[in-house]
Image (cartoon, rainbow, N blue to C red; front, side):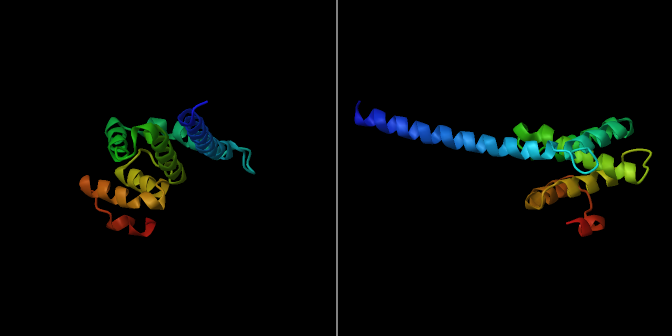
Length: 140
């Protein structure tokens, strides 16, 4: 075998192993979220429960607002982010016995469901939408 082909095989093997490790990491994280907790439901089960429990409370205008808020998320992950945020909004709505999803619930759920490392993008999007963040400073 020639030297360049040997190097190609070595580099290709390293690339494949790296990609498999990265994929395995994300699959393992998803697996951990699917594990049932003490109450018998997993994090994702509760998220789905809250979404189904409050789906009738969402108006088209509020759905569009949620869509606009998750625009900064890369399209590959946007659906997952939207479900996570909608689940948190639903949880807040159930806890407060809300009769409809309001902008206040959406902003609070959006802030709580967003990881701390992404709060700078969150703040930028809220300012772009001209939403006053002073009532929500304690959530940051």
